[in-house]
Image 1 (cartoon, rainbow, N blue to C red):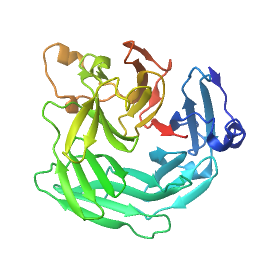
Image 2 (cartoon, rainbow, N blue to C red; image 1 turned 180 degrees about the horizontal axis):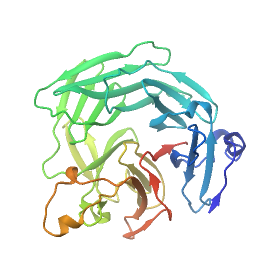
Image 3 (cartoon, rainbow, N blue to C red; image 1 turned 180 degrees about the vertical axis):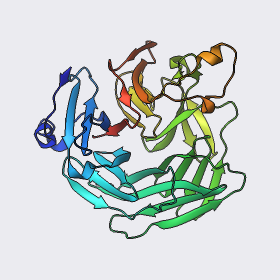
Length: 333
């Protein structure tokens, strides 16, 4: 493994103008007891490059946690403050603080057509039972523009993803319920999870909302490789449509999945799935006949990184070691 610890600015000389930058890396806090501003970026090996590791120490990373990333920008959280940061250019954009009453929330951002810097940031959470809170801010705003959706049928669960396409914002919770807000008509719309649907990951791919559901293996708490499917959301019919492996939107694409919510797609060859996943522990009792729901099972303190080739039906570990629970895919391209 070409594992080298060095200053980010020295390392970034290898990736001028981002054109040759590794598009997707794993980002996690570095094992440095003397600094909370060190992060490791681990780039997976491809046919074009060897596996690489960079350790980055920047003041902006101090005690900050990743919320989302896209096109080289990171959405970071430090206690109640949020900010956008580009580790290549060191440009930082401060955002309005979040409320101290917030628990877990999902966040993302969109770009203008120039892709030079994020244009709009979205965060969503559940305040109390049945009330969804959506906040939108642009760089330079001092407060969030707030929107509430009230439906007492909605269980108070964790926010999972918030994604935006055009003038529509798509909010997903951990039960797979999709709630859409149209910024033009100011109308909310709720889309229930289809019957017999499995746990899934959500992302924007080629201008559309995509879902990658999978069954889970009860023996090891890992997604079953043969159960990965690709769906696109059809807004006209408010329905999920399954795509075949040969579909132009699926073919020659790699899908990077993460239980923390940062999921991406990238050009590749064939149909490949990469995922960071927390294996479930204490499964022996399940095999002995004591059935427990997945949500009730203890979760490991580490992540495993795995790779599935869906065409050749092969599966393997990406790295010979584990990652911290805060590890996440980041989009640096």
